[in-house]
Length: 400
Image (cartoon, rainbow, N blue to C red; front, side, top):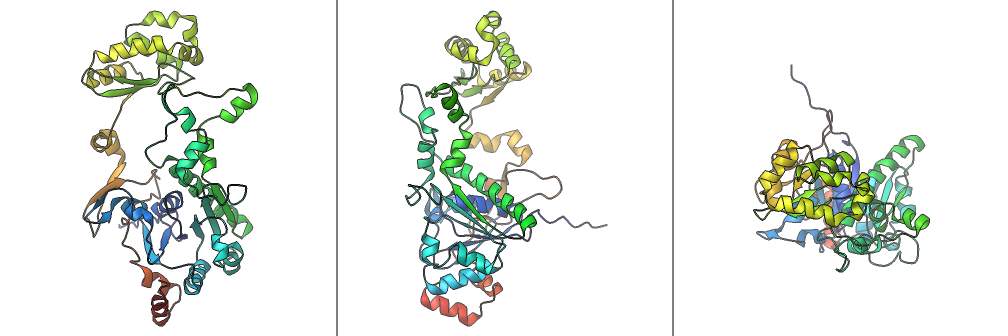
């Protein structure tokens, strides 16, 4: 008996991705990974900048292959009447629009919430900007780097005597993307009850602030401002990276008291367990120098393989510090299918991160990698009801 695989959970959900770099498009990608029909709308003469970000092969941007996966691509100039009208035709049958223009831009083009909700009252409009839709900074250009600075993240990252440190990748954008995908699904759930859509106002500065910890509460109640501590934690110790005898690095964490005690026995310093300050994480953190010396000197006498084996035998928490080569070779990542191979007409088989999580009954998947600029324009516009003559007219105007 042949069984048909169940449809992915978001099959039938129609998403228009009008956003660029990086939070909005990444959120739309996450929806597409679980079956949503995502249509990426790009300017006819100004492709999404992610197509040119980072390394390329044979002139083809590699970052786009990930960010554009599971999306059909069309071109529309939304600032001209023909492009505006075509977008409204697409919006009439969409469930979600994701955009990240500066506040007021869509309104200037006649594509604000008033116009969009008029053609489709059930639409969810996710607006992703650096600072939100209102307030004194709303019209400023905003990028994830600014959120990493303003959220307090950079102030607590780096060595105590060094400068504030920014991550070398799009951390704030990625966190905002996760929050946006969550917000969209929340709004869609509300729609099932109310029957109508709504606007999601996502300011990239806010999710980043949420993940750095209870700093506002600490300051409110105690006047406490967390300083930079490098790899150390103010809440427990030992917690650091340590160099092995073969020049590799490992990370050790002892958030649980039982783990901290196991580590001290393993590194032949059981007497430290009897110190009064060892009884809780805060006390251990205050004596991090002593604990780092004990753990670091032991690890320095062992190879990475030896240290990993000893910690695992002792049921103590340790992990190797990987670069991407290690990630691709790691048996746990391989078992989970964390990195998967995707066939691509332009580059052949390519490897990239898989979908974010596994569902036992209705899993997501990568149907295709990022497609060429405007590859699906005619197909998508035809499905929206435009005739070949209308599409040709838009092309003649430069609207597609």
